[in-house]
Amino acid sequence: MKPSASIVVLDFGGQYTQLIARRIRDARVFSVVLPPSAPPEEIARWNPAGVILSGGPQSVYEAGAPVPAPGLLEHGVPVLGLCYGMQWMAQTAGGEVQGGHGREYGRASARVAGDSELFHGLEEAQTVWMSHGDSVTRAPQGARVIASTPETPIAGFESPSRKLYGLQFHPEVRHTEHGTAILQNFLFRVCGVQPDWSMASFRQEKVDEIRRQAPDGAVICALSGGVDSSVTALLLREALGDRVHPILVDHGLMRAHEAAQVVEAFGRLGIAVHAVDAADLFLGRLAGVTDPEDKRKVIGRTFIEVFEREAKCIPDARYLAQGTLYPDVIESISIKGPSAVIKTHHNVGGLPEKLGLKLIEPVRELFKDEVRLLGAEMGLPREFLARHPFPGPGLAVRIPGEVSAEKVAILQQADEIVLDEIRRAGLYDAISQAFAVLLPVRSVGVMGDNRTHDFVLAVRAVQTSDFMTADWFRMPHDVLDAIASRVVRQVRGVNRVVYDVTSKPPATIEWE
Image (cartoon, rainbow, N blue to C red; front, top):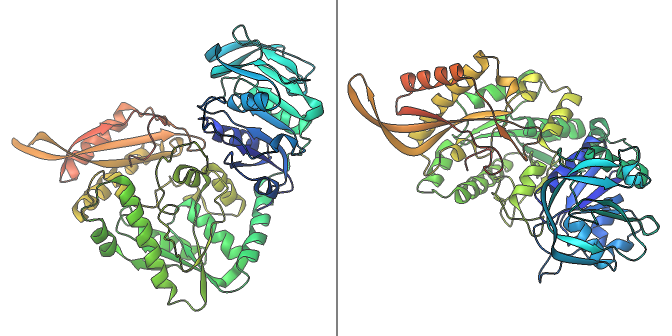
């Protein structure tokens, strides 16, 4: 996809980079995150109206510190540097950066220049969010200081003639009082973009792109029944019609009765789904595998193997389509230069060197909530839109340690109870994602005067807007009591239930 205009975010490894991209999209402007080393032609491909340089954990004067490709500041579009991005800009443009000067973490009181375009219409005294150890001690030649705090005299500078703007604080986080307005001033007043990016425009652009990607031949669509793959299937059907062949691989790791439910639901939409029972193959491959990354890669490779096999039954099959999301890409591969790989998603890191089919990923540029908006735009029924996310590797990543048919059966039964009690309490829509995890731990219990030594079940429920960060859900005690009572009473093999109260970060949403 190449939008009419976009904002390119270069990621130096900052913890808030994805928030920058989200805030821009919230303003109805398309944004894309690229590694700092992205060459000029890659940046130009996105037709940028502006570039934002993120924060990062390193110091600009350290050996090996990330730097953009040469010529970025002469690219011809406005550049906004945040934190590390500001420091790199200052150093590159003739200023000076030093460590140990004005170290600040958390909220700070700032004074800003009201006549700066970045602060147009805002109060000159405002609260901002700082997180830095180094500081700009001399602004670039010709630039003026536009923000300061008691600890950081140069908390912002600008050189409108060179289209350079720098802020030491983070406007993308909610703790910065007028952060959204500052970013929107950069978008609309400095870069001159229009808030014209929408799901309707994305839909049409993506349909056109799919037709260019697959001018002929059949497309196999990997379908799970989740909103990501369901929206992918609808987009493909709109673009290519009957050339699309949705395939549901039942890897034996789905929720109870889920495969049959998905086939039936798509049938009501007039889309025939070919279901493949590959449970024995997947469980056999997972035998003895305990490392989370290894499990994901085994599942990824096996998924592709099954699709390649099924493709032989479909005349002229040339493409494989799947519902990869932007967070999947970000968490799977280090497109972010200095950032660490968090975990490999089965539909990214599991792809083999030789796929055999060309890959189509229509929603890989969207966040989870944006996919839901696109689904609503396309008329996807609520039973799909409101469904909690379910990982591609299925219950395998909710069974830490080795996966077995016995453990899967136990977890399917327990998970069904967890979701049933949440729905009974009217909490399903208030929770972004809820599920059960079968721990590789056995505890001693007593049932009917007999000693038991069975598994421990963890219940996880979170609230989030974008799944890049999440807070644990404050589950009412009576609901937790109902879940624990039913699980211990009805699920043979579990004698203890615990509740996960960890947010993301530091944890991920899934346990593996």
